Image (cartoon, rainbow, N blue to C red; front, top):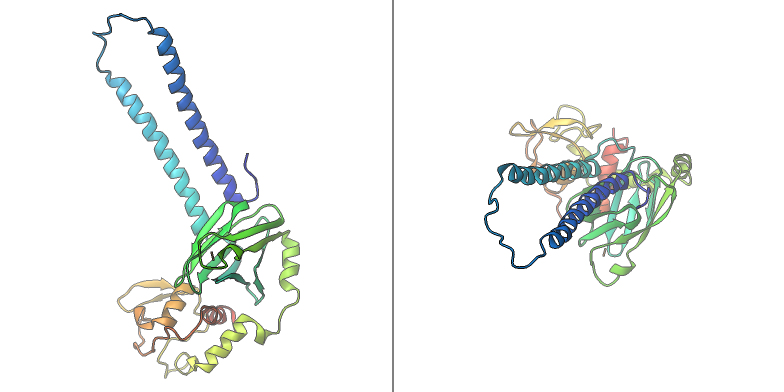
Length: 304
Ligand code: CUA
């Protein structure tokens, strides 16, 4: 048996056991038949010709059965994969910034941690990960979960640990001198303890990541275009997060972190319908952390 540390691991464990079972069954069948046939037809000098050369029913049988088993494995595995990487019903959101050679975690409400990821047991936490420099890989051996963390786009991964505990997180992609030191801890707390932890030692609002986002928003005078009223060049960003908007050309998108990130760095790529393509691109002007803080501010902050 494997472990029951993660709900996803349990799904994969059942699939692995099924694969193991199928493998053992067919290997045994082949080896037993080999031995039986060796014993039964071992006499030398026998005339072997004249046997049947085809058997349609047998051929259909040994074509269909493996085909159905393969389809079952494919559907089963694909469903688990979707569950793991697309589940929308997560209770927690944590942004993850990977850089040489550390992991930084940002929680809703403004808490931040370096190399320590706190999550509640028995709930789904969605990680939204990005790298500031090269490719890293977020790896929790105990949960059997690994996902590459790339520069330039947000990668999502759902965790659903069941057992409270303290587990190692590794970087599983060679990323330079201190790659082997790029570790962190996954600390799984009972849900009540996690709530307490989340509320404890809160930083002053201005120090929190959304507060830093607000300062950037003000410093770059985003509000001079993005504000309520009639003389606006850009859409009002208040409460825009999570809404479905129409783009020039008629396509509809939901405003999420990826949309906002693209809209800051390369605005002309996705123009909000009804607004001019007037915003300059900010490519290269923000660090990943600054982008995260701006997005957090637009998502959580009070920006009237
Ligand atoms: Cu980061 Cu290896």
